[in-house]
Image (cartoon, rainbow over all chains, first blue to last red; front, side):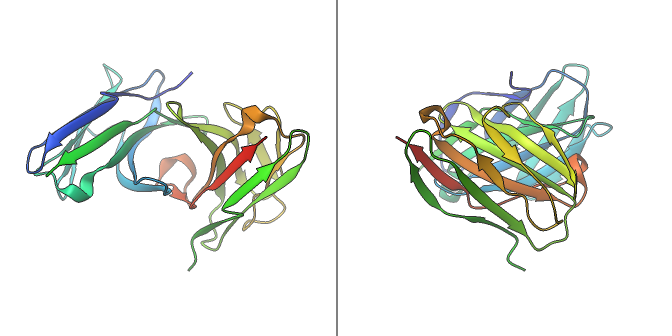
Length: 110
Length: 113
């Protein structure tokens, strides 16, 4: 079964608005990562948050991690058309396995 | 650096045929992995390797073989292709295993008729 589960499955927002995606996982992790995938392309790494961190920022991205709830969220502020993509969380298990979620499809409306 | 390269980009097979998907990286990464991506299923780990000569199974290993004779190459072999193996396959590598960023190849789109 999938370790990471994103919510929502799809999200459409107006350009300039903020987008929030959530991820839940099931077992203990070393870290959790977020990736972006543009249509027909490979995945691109966005941000990594370690299990002992609670919040991390990178440009317009903000990631939080709550290990007690086994959940993480990705916030994209001031969205742009170029942010249209699928976003995946990836939970890094302590046995060297990486489990990806099913992804959130984000569509930025002009 | 070319990063992670995959060949071919597209492949059509008939049921029962065998083939090898190639993956190579020029970043001297120890950790490499193979995923398949199906609509609505996200990415699922097939096999992974923590270094040359060491491989292990992921979430969906059945029907696939891997070997890691060099640090650079991590081929994925389909022994007897089945329509259920129609998917997009991604190879990834990392210098620090699961503790760091994964670098992905562009993918191979495989169709099994």
